[in-house]
Image 1 (cartoon, one colour):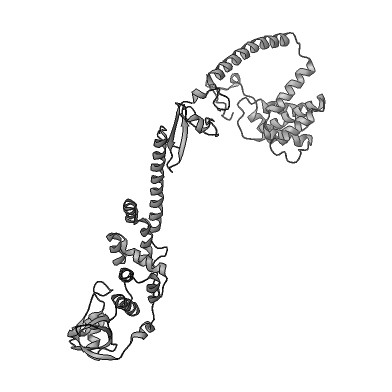
Image 2 (cartoon, helix red, strand yellow):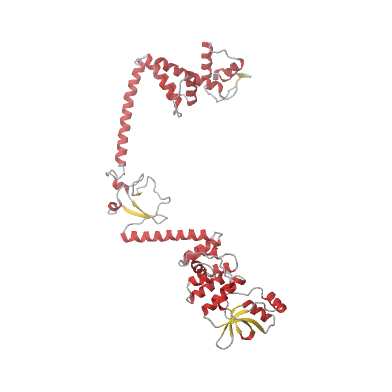
Length: 473
């Protein structure tokens, strides 16, 4: 197969100059027309015959002199056919001494390309005939002014299936479009698969590319299977997505997460050794029972039975410790063993940690606490905890600022507070300290979002009316 792609060819009229002699009128009956490089029906013969009847043959045909005295037509098949249709008995001809078949074909090819242009397969057939007669590809290429690779590429088109050549003949596919199929000539199944894709609307080049890859994968799978069979290795089906579930006893050999980390050469001597072949033809070695390597040093397989036993022991110890610890806490709380300052510090730290990020940000603004640069995530919380570590007073300031932030959020947001205690406590703090005097609007919101108790619900017509917590009162 050549490396070129069929492209158009061209010649010049000066290619025949060396062989030209004077034209003579010769009888049509003595002219023999061998097979022309142009296949099928010669184009435009009736119109050319009409012109010849009116004006005569303006350009002489070219013939070779035969040994029996007659003539072999070399160039001018259309003019000869039109002259016969037009009723002429003789025609002007350039007579040459008889040359070899290769030279005759070469001249025919040149003449036809110059005048009408050959169809793709006609041009390919002419080039192949010349090659079959022993003409070097370089000489053919010089005749039609192209490259040797292009000549071989044109000739390769003739090897394509009849179906493809028919599409080229009908103009439904160009030679350049069809040429990628030449690479599949040695693989009948691949050619069939590619043509099926073309029938389904695929681009020829893409159909050939995908078919070639598919066939390469198939060959790789076959080669891998033969190699494993020769090694005596057990072959299993590949997992659906290329990996085994984490709970499966079968796992790949390797260094990845969950792999059995035993060298293939070592593992191949064990009864649990096997392999599967991937979709791309790669061989993947596996262990059929990773439990056989459980706890082995370097295997990467944990001893699950021992780990489960250890977890059970640890949980039992934790339950026992919790029972003892809880009893100790009961005794401490009932006997007031926790000092007042320790209890307050404990509660304040928990209240700080329990607040939301928005509350931390508001509290940091209330205290004018600076958040260090580069601490975007939870930066306000860390800054508040750092400030609280300066002493009891600082801790109390931070806890109070966080509580105020939560109260403001409850008072200003429309988010439902099912307990309705945060707004009330916040309002009571503001009233009792005289920090701020509520406006009428603020008092209305406070009353609306304040505490609600079932026993305070109104009675309508002597019957108790149950208010849902989310109803406005």
